[in-house]
Image (tube, rainbow, N blue to C red; front, top):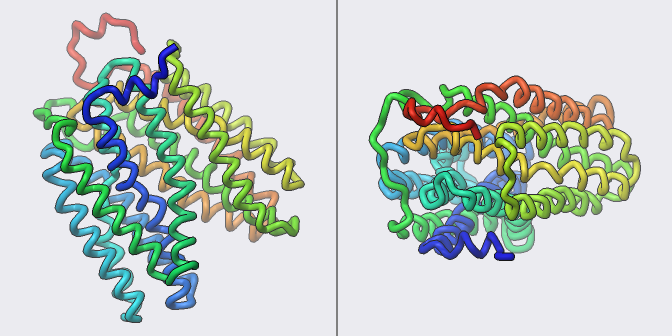
Length: 406
């Protein structure tokens, strides 16, 4: 039986842009926590570190879809080059401000343009879509990218904090900025796989977020992002209460491992079930597996429950991006994918806040009630959105509507 992952990398140029894309996306995980690690050491104030990091993250959540919209209209090379250059320059100013103890306002002022950092995962998925559009290999490519995202979040945050602690406070941010500059430059330089700019049509009028499928999938993944963040916050709080704070990293790692393994398996399969139903099943599993987390009162039980809970995360991401590719006009595809990525980030931000408040107010174990509520929200969103998700891609010609819906 042929290896489906080996097959997708037989296409010319795929190895190059996938490798460059992986390097360029590491700052997604490294920068937010790197800012906290840097400023908490240089200024000794966690509120300031958190505020600057949140300023960067929330501004990026707003700006990255706008950058992707420009990419859809003018091409990756034309937009990524200046956006990345401005972001890199702003990060360097932020590092200098921390190192030289400039006024606090300069930290916030630098964080704002640093948020011009583009959504590289969306750019990579757009290239895969251009190569394997409407072919089974695209599901495998999206699975590979979901697994790559998992590795980024696992390795990126740990690397950023580790460098800052082991070397000097700014080390994590310096390396993150280097990865962004080098990785994006290498990615943009590979012009042969860059998706062509498609002429705008009626289906691409306005923003991608105005389209119902993008709204549904983005909202569903805001809830999923909240589940992901809640697991991290609650794991830290519970292991600390159990007197084994060092076990938190193991528990969080197990969460990612479950998602990683199942994502690889799903990507190797050619499932025939319609994508909107696959998504409903995946989020239903996520919702159900949040319940046992409420009863995990030992580290072993917590690790097992978290492992099971994480198993449906990658399949959810794979199917969600597949739906965006199938339901959104190619002229706004990159923007549509970016909104979904943004949804995950927004969900993680709000999930961390909500879980932290619940833990502080009601105790560590109750933090997982945020996961339960978010799981239910995600499932209901997808359930009630089945009709819209099952529709034809915007701009589909009338004669194509006679074909069975995916």
